[in-house]
Image (tube, rainbow, N blue to C red):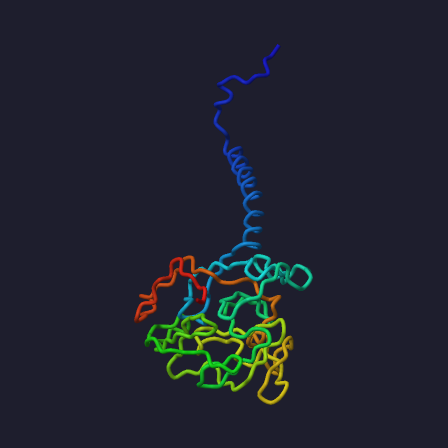
Length: 290
C-alpha cells in the first residue's frame, strides 16, 4: 500500500514557470483584496491626496504640491467618494455629520458647472455680503479685508512659461491670516459687484488674485437680481458661456469634498521657476489659516 505522505524529495521540487506565475497572482489577489477596500475606506472617510495642477493658489500652493484633504472636516456627501465617483453613483443629496466650514479655510470641491475638482479659499459664508470692486480690497459684511504689504516676488509661471513680478500681501480676517499675490500689470477680475451669498452656498477665491478663475468672475453666476447685486445660486452659466469656460459661481455645501490641511510633499522646485525669493518650505507645510 502506497504511503500518502510526500517524500522530502517531492516537497523540494522546483516550481515550473507557470506554477510560479499562478502563485504570484494568487498572492497579489489576496493582497489587493485586502488593501483596495481599506484604501477606499480611508480615502473616502479620512484623508485623500490631491495634486495641485495650477497656480491659482500661489504662494500658498504651488504646481506639483501633494496636499492631504481632510474628508471628515465638513461631514460627508456623495462628493466625498474617492476618485470623484459621486458624479456617477446615484446617492441622495445632503450631508451627514455636517460641520460648517470657516472663513479662510482652503477647501477642495466639485465645480458646480463641469466635472472638475477645484481648490480655493473660502471668503464668503452663507448670508455674507461680499463686495468686489476692481482695484480695491475685498469687503466682507461692510469691512474690508485687512491687507499689509509683505514683499515683492518674481518667478516664471508654470504655464505659460512667462516671467512675472507680484506684490505679496498678508491678508487678515476673523483673526486668521494668509498670503496673497497681486501680479503687476494684470487684473484678475474687472468686476464691480456685490455678492450676497445664498444659504447653503459659499464664495471661493484663489490666493493668486490675478490668476484665478473663481467666485469673483460672474460667468458662473446667476444674473444680477438687482443692479450690481448677485444673490442667487444654482443657475446654469450665463448666456453664451460654456460649462468649461464658466467660473465656479456660488458653490453649494454638498459640493465640498474636504478641507486641505497639509502640503505633504512636492515636486515643485523654485530653481526651475527662477523664483526670487525662493518659495521653499514645501514639506509637511500646514495650510490652516491662523
